[in-house]
Image (cartoon, rainbow, N blue to C red; front, top):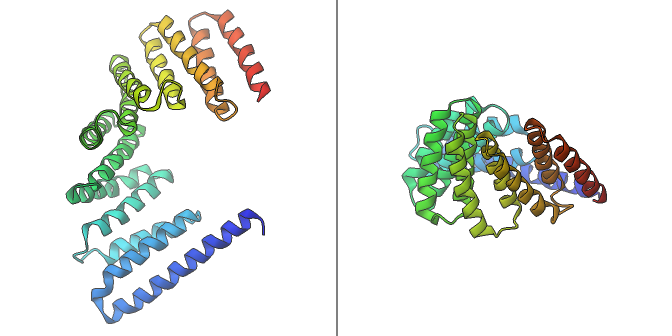
Length: 282
């Protein structure tokens, strides 16, 4: 059996087993209402399986049923937090960002109330929520959630953490989009330094951070620094071809565009030829 057919069959068997478990719990709840927590958990498993299989509408309906089933019950906080998290991310990543907002907010509140490791889950959700607010041009709300996420992650993992570097990078992107290149540069520099210390100087994420910093420098008219940063970024990625072909091409294209904007057509042309030769080999 081809691999994709085997995967589909496995996914279908998982869904069928989850459906059976849900029906069993629905029947149990009719006779013993106190069994409702088990129904909510079974619905969570089914919704996750449906989402994994690409049945977005089915997963949404299942998560909503789980929330309705647990609405008037004193369930463990983690049960409802997980359902709300699943529904929020499902809606968000399906292009329905505005609908995801209340579920994100409730899930964050649930996870923070639980404390411990759940506080980190809440921080990651704040990061997601901030990105959603950024896409909606609600920059102040996005900044608020990024800063809260950063505070939690620094307290839990320390400053030298990839998750902390990621939030710094996201904050930089937010400030850049909002028209504050000075603040963007500061955030990008912090994220870059952490990534170099945690991942090493030649990691692909370091290359991305160098590119981000280059765009901020260009916005601040420091084009010499921007060129140097772009070159460092491309050098890192060029050594990791063919795996990093897409990133190499994307960052190289950004660099070419910047060179053309500042009137360095000769350098831009030379870079295009260099990229064509490098990419032709891979």
